[in-house]
Length: 125
Image 1: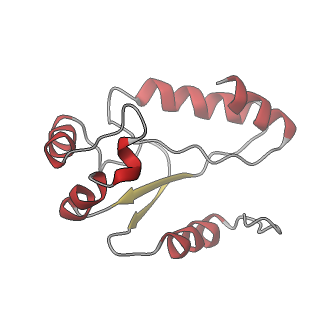
Image 2: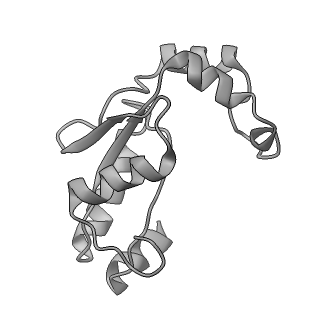
């Protein structure tokens, strides 16, 4: 939270990614929004949705196994999707929702940049 606070204070753009679980993560997201906005920043929420079969294929990738705590099996993925509202936008705030099954990451980024009218820099966004 300190990193997010300092970035907002200094006007540094920050991309924070995680899988939002409706209910259990609400307090955390509220806290992030509060910290950013109290320190002069702006929060732009994006929900990426992907077909569960495609997600099941992606989670078995070797690169995920190297990171502790990552979902690495289709059964674990399906269980988490059933247990938490992993396809739900955060309530009470605008969220850009993108269906990105089979959609290249750079194209997804372009949709986000255009929707929120983000400024492009030499380094990308």
